[in-house]
Image 1 (cartoon, helix red, strand yellow):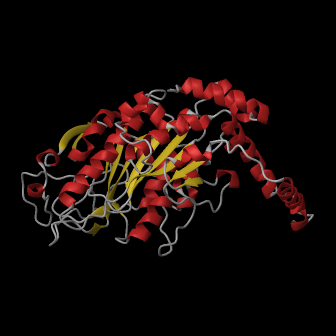
Image 2 (tube, rainbow, N blue to C red; image 1 turned 90 degrees about the vertical axis):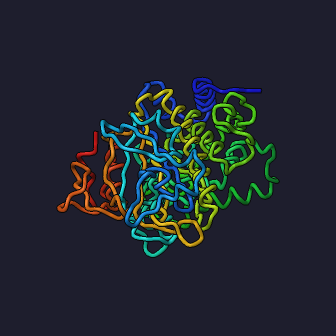
Image 3 (cartoon, rainbow, N blue to C red; image 1 turned 180 degrees about the vertical axis):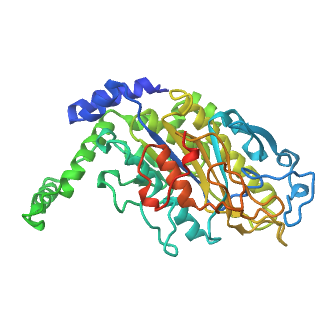
Length: 433
């Protein structure tokens, strides 16, 4: 069985890269310059914030909110008191494993999603820009974050697992590479061991050479062929160095134990997804990774009481181990940011089927990056409703504003040292460290 350390993987990657003009990556690593890393993790289906980032006291009665405590197993009934950036608050019991990471945590509460429709909400949290109906606008958040690095320094600078990725305005080299499930990374990096017939290869070569004839002679930009050749060479280097073996998680018993992975071939298991995200950074393949960490959260019936807390905890547990891995070489996550979100939340009241429906008042979690640690925003205690928030203090204020995802997106981008102009709003400057 083979195990990989970050040093082993980087040594192998850079060694193989030299033969295929991977100078930028080699130079970057040789200089030891800190590299910005970004992770966007999506919880599909609409998470219950009362069980997670925006809980309530189960021992009291609320005017328009039902905690549902009586339907839950004892382990999911009691919120956890924590201190985040000097602020005392509570988090839901499903987030118990994340308590050890509260020192690098920034929590945004009361974010207005302006929708309770899955396609619209999914498009919104992919780009953090209001969609046109269900059609996303702008670049994926992960694509924007990849723009802060030299794409030539990475084989797969912008990677997306289990979710769409968009690039409307940035360098084509930053366009996300998308796979459906985490286990497909092995296939992407495994040598095929076969070549095309000579006649077929000759036709492809002719088509590539003829590319110039489709472009006006006055065009002075890079051709698509030129934009892809570098990526092709880097991917070939990764395949030849057998970096695909790093994603054969079943061959690493220590990793399996750390993440609690039972079946390494289950590409939708949050633990497998999180471990794959970690490996993308440990191998030096990527600088920005977006992934669906958990699905199946759209609980409208009595399954809510068992499935929702279990699924949330499973994902948060995987996230906690991923943060452990990322903090191994960036202890305070100064050069790393991890953002977690869902398309919206679930209703404050239990419905007639003993479940919860869709609700627009959401929370967004951020770990690391150049953000002020603490809790920004809150929701109405009695109803989980939206409040106007002072953008400096992060506390409710009649003269404040209801916070939209665009404001959070601009803040996250600014915290990574990038231009937030695409969001057409200003960052929360007081929340930039």
